[in-house]
Image: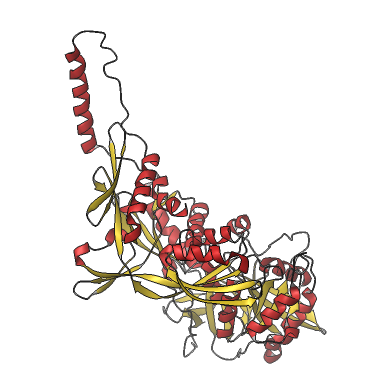
Length: 602
């Protein structure tokens, strides 16, 4: 009976480039299987987060269980809908580990894009069965046969294996569901073996503690059972076991091959790690599952609360959010300008924006962020190599032998008419041209190697602008390379503002320093004393601007009399402003910390 049950399970995900129709396809599957009542159905149903619906993108993977009837047999479909943006690739890789197959979706009008290639290679590397699907065939500008041919060539498949759908119109969905039954293999596992479940995601519930999202590979799990995390050796009693349909629904047990969740009751969030293996405490498995490769964040920034009393609230929020998104890191840091806060590491700039917005919305925090930067490898004079994530902590110039910055391999797919403009942008960003290959007569693949620091701010925006939205971009880290990099400091009244320090290429230091000082002059409000703003590089002042003081007319009440009366009042005012400048504190608004971003976007 258990073998027959396993034969009816299909675990699969949907992967695609951003905005190619993953969530809409999931909607049609939910409708066709009757998982969602038509009265409660809404577009992009699995995108439950308010932020996802506002931006029109998938940020988190979303599991759901569906029942599908085929040839008088009821099959169990466990679908995991995944994000499409390059910054959330880690979500995609985790979902693939919990599946036996995947649907690779491509827009019939856009064709193969950078993230399509990246996702395809991840699925092949994971050993999954891939069902290639050309979506949006209802669009007037659709090129279904041409795109299908390109897709088949990339996967080394026959063009007959490619399916055609319109998720919006519901065309071809029934054919795709049958293909899932016929092409994707059932899971392997034995319900009689010791339980072995992979934690692929988790969230925090105020009443039930940590909810671990699991894929059960062997054994069975029941409620009120003593279980154990194999890596952390934490033992706990399950409060509840359930499935996603798509809302969490309690069941009596989970069997090998199924996807569901466990309410652990654990309130100490640090004890639960994504990628850990859960087994029974009484009869544990001999070895844990492989888990996940630890990702290394490459974009860093400081995060502080507007009210210093909210520091502990921010710490609690970061701990809870890290359960749901394990790809960002955080550690405490102190800034002279901003007080106590955290240094956060992200996979990309969009990832940073999403984390900040989630912290502000879900935990009701008012936050200040510093300028994003990358991690640098610094070789000291004695030969020791250190990593610096915060420019303010960069050693003195005399202690540094060399500085290396992270380089990426950028893959850009674009219509041929935009090649010239794209190559100009890449060269401006210190890109090193590698290859150019034509997918078809109208589309080309460009490969560049360039510094990650040049990409994280505005490269994606510039690329979309010059290509009118048609170019796509994906990247992977290729290592660190030495470069003539220097620290650029901003001084306000002679005092360095650590939150505004940044590491730049030596050739660009003067222009960036001058533009930044000019921008700060506009955003820093006038005080009762003169404010001097300076940019300093390698111990030299390279730019300066003065914010004029607010002036009270102290001679207004002097009607005539000797001129010495007025001079005496003016000298007294001058001395008072001098003392005020020595002890006065300049309040720097958050716009100042975003000035570097604005400068590099222009």
